[in-house]
Length: 261
Image (cartoon, rainbow, N blue to C red; front, side):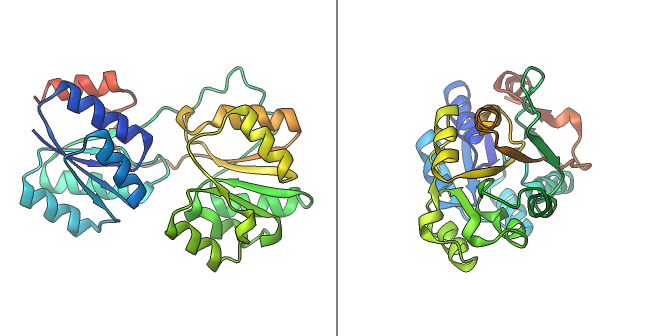
């Protein structure tokens, strides 16, 4: 069985390893970065394309290599690629599976320091209004910095990002001092988050509602310890998605795959 996997997340590497262990499958994984591509290859992907692909390129790829399943395991906030992959699968009558990590259960977590917004632009406006003192920790990726920095000055802004060339270039263009860049290597623990808040004299942290794998609970608990605000961008709702095509763990993925292999 030939699978095209839209990846670049921790979820996607878990999926590669799982499928390779349990099924006779050829997997081509697409990622937007070289770093993501290396992780996919290490996880066992047969082939990797490490750059953003346009809709026509993905369509041609599927047709030329006769892929039978399209698995979308991109980030919950990668709204555009998910909409694109749904559209492609409908046009080509291709089996489509969306792997979407569940939202974080905050039922037993103190969320009194959490401010929910629907966009990064709204996050920037909120910080400008409510957090005029102290520094801003940006734990939401290099691609979202510009929206925040329309409202937050570079001297207060500390992004935690992968130190890859594309992210460094974005920081340079936005005037972020190299000494403000916090290297990212996976989700941080409560203690690590506290250490960062103390080190950079933070009054607020920006994060996405990216699920347990993104360390959301650890960020909130650290913020509670240090009286630091958390501005959380809520996930986009993608109307094009059919809920019957969504799985949220490997067990649910297996149910889908066993019907196909």
